[in-house]
Image 1 (spheres, rainbow, N blue to C red):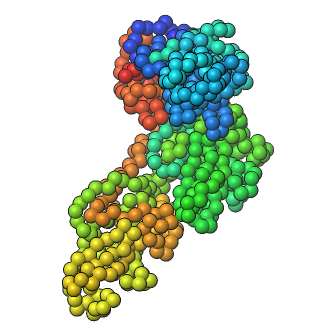
Image 2: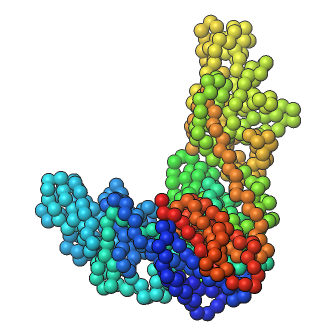
Image 3: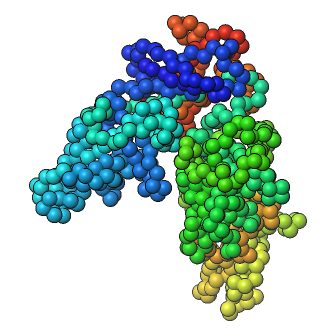
Length: 631
């Protein structure tokens, strides 16, 4: 096994050769780190060599027996990437794609002369046949033979491989993928088995290569070490897979900052900002130039989506969907250009103009954006304190209860209730209601559900389910026999004489900034004005809101952000990426003979895990290895 690492801040490469052991593990990385040779705040990144392929029996699983990388193209950003992890499938259009939907590249026609996306279908059949594909084979040279349902056989294309003179210079662009860089000395793509490239093996997978980052912790956390990403489910929480920084601008001082803390939200004016109001930079869809990222908020957007490329898509209640700009990352800064202002923010030297920071995501070595994730290493205690006071909401599954007054929202929105004691209003998604002695629809603590309270559905207020205000017996002298809720919130009552009419209607509310809501009792939330209500009263099923489900309750999701212990004051931090299995064992040794298990760590949803060795001696040698079983 050859291990290559680079000390951050030092010149030159450190190479260590270790004999490959007969270990039954997905990846095994062993490296030497002498504490006295690794200054505080330095980082070493290490990548293990490929492990032997594992048979899967799946035809589109491909491994490379020798040097080389598969070439992938992102159909959205048109960027190229390389990987040795050949876990491919055929999509609905016949393209051979990775798990992320990137298309395998090669000779895309039967003459093997045109380069492009590999597609397995009946197109370019020598006879012009349009019969469906019955089966196909992928040979060791990458040639794809297709057999059609009518028996016609022909060459459909050929997978090509690429190699690099300096593969250690490849920049990580995603899970198991790398973005080609000029420093990697890319060689022309060629068929497998030629030009010193390995041949293909169908039906087997090479376990992903594990990358390990070892950091000596002493005092403040290293400036440029990557942190572990944790999923939060919040669309505007943005992590970075790989290198790079978000660019922020102070609208008051015009000062520029960079950060890896991607905890953002849209403010009332549509700017994507951090919790301090600094504006995220990118290409604005309206101004069509580099600057503050902003989406139109008139009318208020219903939802937004941010892709791995940084592209923003927004939708309005009427169903209109539009492009909202792109978030940019920068990765060309030198440490001397940055001035730390607090734990997470670094001010950019005034000599660095904004245009020089405009490096698109996944280009020039910058990483990918991971929506719905946060990089927890980048958070300091004060920001965590703010974070824990924020509320985030997702949709939970609905369960039937059989209770006539139980209501659940099948989609977006909040129910509004009023506390009659002080006339305060609250938002909730918990529709466990009852009728009080006066016929009012109330929560278990007596707070009254709001909506249109009269049969004409024009007056807002407390909802009452009784026989009053009917078309014939307005005084309610005829007893109420039954009532029912409709999916649009209308409450229909049936009187004892057979009269039936709409008595009232439950309405819903949505907020532009739900993070501002503050918990009152665990299920109801206050501070509605700061959360920016979008409507006066909105009918269920309209404006992108959900419908009501009767005699049902939503199992409210419980979102627990990871408890983030402060970084230790001293020791070593081991960060492992590209772990396919669920558990990795980290071990340490002082002599490469006697190994002590520091403990197992579980990979998160993007295949990363970390461990802190707080008992590491300060001045002696220390060896580490990570081992992961291949399932």
